[in-house]
Image 1: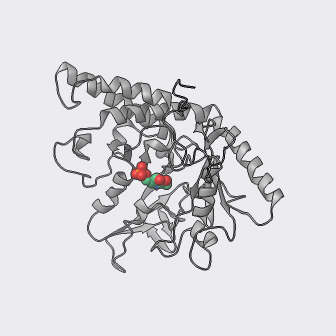
Image 2 (image 1 turned 60 degrees about the vertical axis):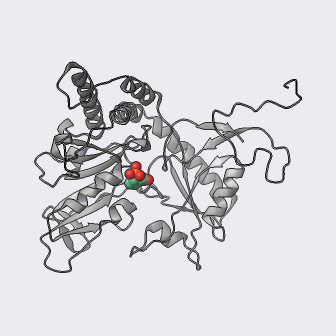
Image 3 (image 1 turned 180 degrees about the vertical axis):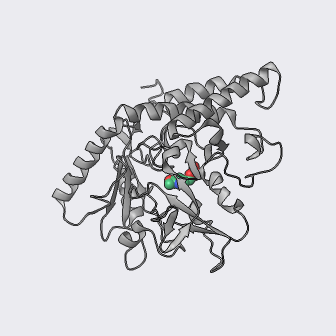
Length: 365
Ligand code: PLP
C-alpha cells in the first residue's frame, strides 16, 4: 500500500485485462490468463529476441561492400541458412519478404494468361489471387494451403497420375504451397514436396511479426516481387529488414529443434484430452477435423447457437485468449469451417483454440 492509501498497480508485464474488476465491478479471483491463440500469432522466442537485439547494434547495410556492410551481410546470410534448414530448401531459394501475404504476391507475377487455381480452404492471401480466364489458359498454377489455420487440418495437394497437380479435373503445371501454419509444427521439406513456391511467416513459429519469406525453387523463373536496388537476388528490391530477418532465422532454427525433440507430441496429447473431455461433457459441441490429419495444437469447436465472437468475449473475460472462425467471405465454394459453422443467419459459431508449445501466461485475469 502506498502512503496515500492507493493500492499499487500490479505488474502485469505490460498486459491490461479488459475488466480488471470484472464487468460488474466485482472482485475477481486473481489467476493467470492463458494465451491459446497460437495460430493467430505466437510469443517471441528468446532466441529470436537475442538475435534481434544483436542486429539492432549493427550499423552496416547488407548491400555495402565495406567491413560494416559485410558483417550485416553475414547476419543476413546466416538467417537465410537457418530458414532454409528449417523448411528443407537451399539457402538461395529463400527470398525475404514482409510476411506470407507479400510472398503470395508472386501469384500476381505469373506469365500473362496464366490461371491461378486456389484450394477453397486456403488463407485469403492466396484466395485473393484466384483467377481463371475460362478456357485457353497459358498455364495453371495451383495455390494450396498445407495446414488450415482454423481447423488445423493438413491436406496434401492432389497429384495427377502422370505427374502434375490436380484441381478437380484441371491439371496444374506449377504449385505454390502455403506452409505458414506447418513450419515448426509438422515435418516438412520443400525439396521433397515437389512445390515450385512456398510462403512462410515468422510470427507463426516464434519470430517477429511483419517478416516472412518466399521460397522459390532453384531455376524457377518468375518476375520480381518488387523492382529497384536488386536485393534478394533481384527478386525483391529494397533494403532488407535485418532485425526482423535475424529474429526469423533464430526462431526457425529453434522451432526445428523443438519439433525434432517432440515438443508438439505433448501438445497433441493435451489437445486430445481437452477434446475428449469436452465431448464427454456435452454432445452439442462439434470438433471440426477430429479424425483427420491435423496440426498438433489446433482445436476448432462449433457450439451451435453460440456466435463465435460471443464465445471469444466470454472466454476472454474468463481469462482465455482464443479466436473466432472467420466470417463467410465472397469465395465459392466456402471454406470447411464456414460450411460447418455457419448458422442460418450466416453468423459463424466456431472458435479456434491454438495451444502453445509452452503454457503462455500473459498476465493476471
Ligand atoms: N497463411 C496462413 C495459413 C495464415 O495463417 C496466415 C496468417 O494468419 C497467412 C497466410 C498470412 O500471414 P501474414 O499475415 O504474416 O502475411
